[in-house]
Length: 255
Length: 296
Image (cartoon, rainbow over all chains, first blue to last red; front, side, top):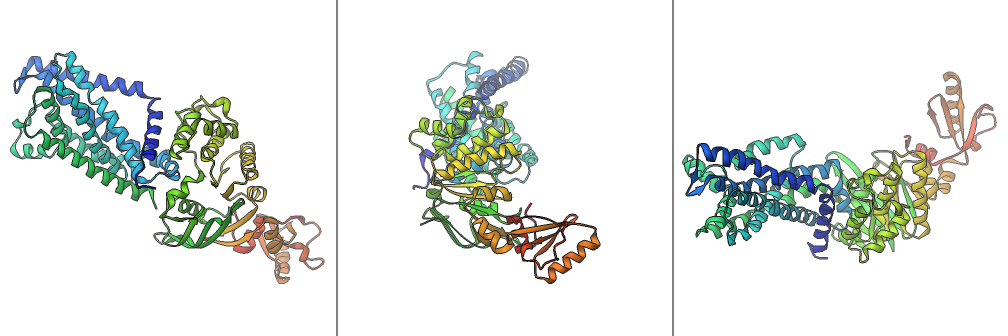
């Protein structure tokens, strides 16, 4: 048998799809409502009182395009962390899957691909909502789901690796406080990072969420020369996180 | 060819030797009961066979495939029924089976699911969420899931642990049907009655290795004789009887307020008090004779 069999990966994904069918309504509802609430609070609240435009773009459109990255991280990193931990420790789902002809590589690949696809779709919701608030559609926006997918793969791999590393579920608090929240705030979603101190601007360049925000805004308002580099960096990160997730989960699942 | 061949298998967890030089062959078409108390190494052995634990040393072959190198090929042909329920509870009975039919690369998924549902007598519940099933139905579904790809070898890890007698009987009926089809079964259990009723052969495990192996009746005859006496009496009287039995070379143990004399038909006349209760010897007696430990 080959090392990674598509049938095994698809089998793992089919389990996720079967489960998702039981809760898709609530997830989709919150994925649509959250950007709407943010846009109302920040876009219309701040945008009509303190800030009207950023970099020549209406503030509501600035925030709306940035919210894509927020949707991606919250629909990839967190489900990967909690989902993996729960399936391993509490539901013992992985024991059942690994007793079938499925290896850890295939298990992780299936989980990451499913999260990536889901987040790729959910990531576009803020963009669609922002259109309702006045954002003009642009042809390059068709690339946004792909940008979201690649970034979500990286965060899914990160989340699975974290779940494979922690001893208790409450240790996720360290990760969300020290990693996810700073990334979210330094992504350039609510304000341009150019206003931050220089060290924070440099740090932001290493923030995959910031790179996704820039790519989404480029797709909406026009690409620049560095965008292929940004995308390539996200692809490399996704690959690295995939390998890391496999390594961490294998240590956890195979005695 | 044996379905399972283990030779000198060792698996340690830190200072603990969970499996300690285990030799075990399981011929095709038989049901072998792996009997032992908690901590004997049964579950670790099961995990070694499914590639979820890697042996420190020794050789493992399952259905002709060498483990862990060819574990995936072996797993494709083996079914596993775990000790703990790990079904997807929000998903329907049918969808639980379909997912595993896909994972096992089954060609005709619909036919495989129909067959598994019929086997588990769950055809009329196929569209219900697992959460709506009774405990017995869930356990039957767990067995059906392990059989959805018609495996040549089935590993049953404590298949009835924690179940009430009625549900246990349902699962035994399922396992008996499987035996009748000629499927090779390795069943870990610490229930004597389960092993005696279902297993063609029993391997008694203690401290990570097999200490005795054979057909239940043969094991009992060899190590525990035909009958065992249980004598309930005040402590002083029990101590006298125990000392006399030990002097006569008979295996003796205490069981609560009784002294138990194993193989009492070999006792000299007058040693076993008339008030003692005698019963047929069991695998429990064999285990105690061999290890000094109780099974349950």
